[in-house]
Length: 255
Image 1 (cartoon, one colour):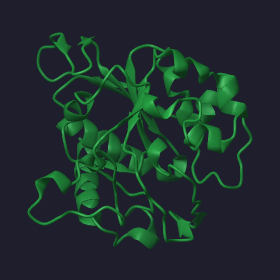
Image 2: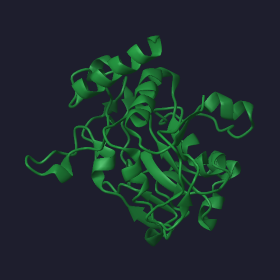
Image 3: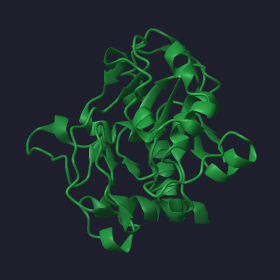
């Protein structure tokens, strides 16, 4: 399920990283059958606001297994089917250009072009560098809430897929390396990890909007504890924004 959307005529443009873009921006979204509606709403929210052509592809574990790219047994602490498959993003992009990975439990409120324009070629990856320790013992539909360094850094990542360091992320490495190695980006040096403003991975229940400060308003809400599609989280912060987007998404699908 891949979709390319072009708003108007496509002309080559130059991003902040100094490279010419004349192809759709590749976005890979973590997919889990239990959260199909979350994926659909995330997908819808990106397309609705994008002023650039984008190519959105769900990372479906069963497809990766069929294609021989993923064979890892699921661990007890993996709360979603994309806990590790996310690190195949450079491989899925053929180790070429820049691509984004994002969890399905995001709601985009701003044009993805703004995020793409933050790209800087000197980095191997770029992400929001959260200092986050969850208070809850469980999340989503009762999954164990784990605590580890750099938590949520890997939930939305811009990958410089052609960077030599990212060619380490072969299927063999993704299927055999530890969670610490992958989620903490241990194949990279710290200076190879670029920083993105927190509003692009605004953690519901953790990050706060400061009244009168527009720089703190989320551009992408991450329902990391669990979103309104789970009964236990139907009244979470920003639930009404997600539900409104879902209604729009469902109406458009019916058309």
